[in-house]
Amino acid sequence: MSSPLGIFDSGYGGLTILDEIRRRLPEYDYLYLGDNARTPYGTRSFEVVYEYTRQAVLKLFEAGCPLIILACNTASAKALRTIQQKDLPLIDSQKRVLGVIRPTVESIGALTHTRHVGILGTPGTISSGSYPLEIQKLFPDITVIGEACPLWVPLVENGEHDKAGADYFVRQHLDAILEKDPAIDTLILGCTHYPLLIDKIKKYLPARIHVVSQGKYVAASLADYLSRHPEIKQRCSTGGSCRFLTTESEDKFATMASVFLQGSLRVERINWE
Ligand code: DGL
Image (cartoon, rainbow, N blue to C red; front, side):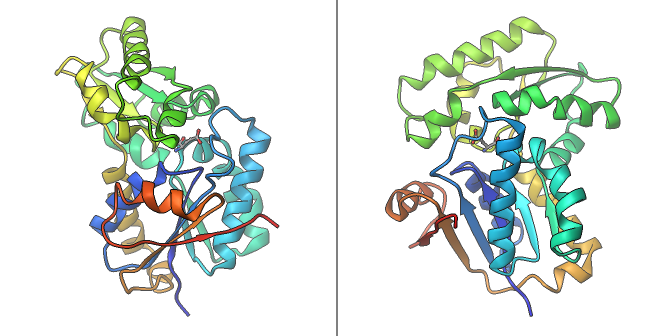
């Protein structure tokens, strides 16, 4: 029995990851869950992010998903480890949940020349210290500076990311992080919502700075994972389909998701019981 790969985010941001994964692995079926009713997660406590993420994981497992990608840095930073270590052995030790931080960190060693890297993320991701911790493990010579951008996710969730008013908030944090460390040559968009702001981000950055959008690294890492784990791969159904679950309005979700994905979208609203 095979089932779709699950992709989870607090809202629309994970669509930037889904898009890259589907480009890389178009043959699989996907089931995306956006917890739009409770977004943003980035300003919430460890306990709340863990509980919400655990509920989402259970929902996607109930739908049969053998493997779930937490396409959300906040959930990856605050909930992934506990879910992997504490919950999975009790729920189903044959299922897997993976995050987005590790694949992103693996990519930066080859990108930075100055060895000064900046992370832009939600307050939750930045305060968790997950990025510096992971980077330290793989590249101890790299200096890491973080900057929390609390309003960037609400800008995206409310469809304001491409409006002129967003420029002020984008520039504010770019100036702040470069002031903290002018030697930064690589800037990680450590939130899956941020690629929607990439045009504005690039507009206010010196051209010498490399902006890292996570999607393609997460997609490459997933492809590698599936090739190394045939027991999981054979449980992922192939058919090229994509279905969407949202905890908010189906229509709103379909409109927003169509920015990323072509064709008509199958969106279903779910409730947390
Ligand atoms: N897309 C999530 C992330 O990557 C977002 C966050 C939120 O809900 O605040 O962190």
